[in-house]
Amino acid sequence: MNKLARVPQFLTQDLWTIDLATLSVPGRFGIHALRLAIAVAMEFRHRLLDARAAGLVYTTLLSLVPFLAVTFSVLKAFGVHQQIEPVLAQALEPLGPNGQEITSRIIGFVDNLKIGVLGVVGVAGLFYTTYSLIDKIEQALNAIWLVREGRPWGRKFADYLSAVLVGPVLILTAFGLLASVHNHALVQRMLEIQPFGFLMLWAGQLLPFLILSALFTFIFKFIPHTHVRFDSALAGGITAAVLWGIAGQIFTTFVAESANYSAIYSSFAVLILFLLWLYAGWLIVLIGAQLSFFYQHPTAYLSRLLWLQGTASFREKLALSLLLIVARRYVKGGGPLHVQELTIERRIPVSLVEEQVQHLVEAGLLGIMAHPKGITLAKPPELISVVDVLHALHHGRGNDGAASDEPDEAVLALLRRRDRAVASALAGYTLRSLVDGRESEPSAQTVSTTATFQ
Image 1: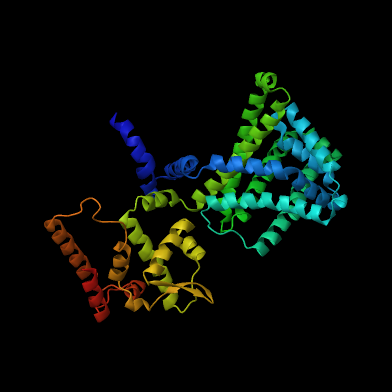
Image 2: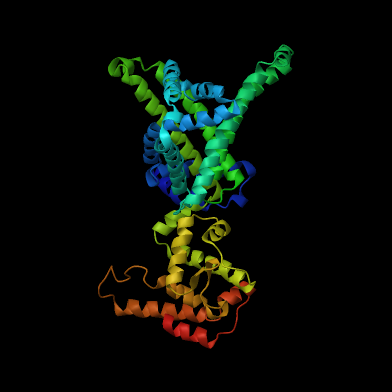
């Protein structure tokens, strides 16, 4: 019973504080994989991945035909538009015969949509619907990466246009080359020679997985409006591709055994299965993006947990480390820092850095510059003592007397004594001394601050 009682503590605390350097390579890999799996699973409750997936399903239903129409027009210019139907059929393959029916209907809608007769307003609406689909995807991924602001309108237009024009061409060209190579006479002769035949068949089965992994990696790398390392995007891309294959097998079995649904819902069964597969597909995309985030920020889950709990130790460490990074840039004569740079340096979510920076700005320790844009110290580092920082963090952090309107005088005296001891012990430390790696002598400014902290 005691072991069972320790499971929640292990999953929420102990698992995230294990020093990986003390473990063997298999143990390190196992703990890291368990952290990623648990952290992503917890996001279903904290980040509402299922709700975002449902929202993307709704957007996809509204935007799918216009998106394919625009894509079809672009692909036709490159002569690869014939590949759109087999690729779409492959994506809907888990639906079985229903997938072929849905593919035929979608392609029929696209063929009947004559862009030339829509007029300026119709074409603009078509492109806006396509734009809205990519914009919703970016919003969902930005929420996972805790990015508060998306791309500016100019960047959105250029990046989304590139995604619509270039992405489908590259993907369908890859699938087209794969099909043509597989049907080549020389390849057919090679298949008859062992072990080359076995190796080529194995490679032929592996290539679609590699292409799908590359597609997911591209989405996770370039769609979020933040810096995503390639290895993080690749980890999410491979995971999403594996989950896609597993989900496809499960869904194929489900469709094969769902004859009762067809009897109940009649012709609506096709639509319901299509919606379920869309939901599963978007859920896989969001899970892959979430895993990419935690792969790049392995302590992000614990950081958010400590932040929400209001842990004083975590806030003090975060504030001092951010100020130290800015102070080092200040001493070297560099320009202001951006929040993204601080995020990358500390490897924690953007929202935590932004909130802490905002509090330090309100405390007069940091300043926000307009030209050049960024964050810098509000005054020289030798005039900012560590006591200043601690006082700023403790000031206004909730109601300390909430538990008791009239705290005991002995308790207050003890806390004052603690504050005086802390102020005295840290009287020689400033941001400049931390940058230089030494303890400076107390200055008049420090002594004044010490009296204020008391």
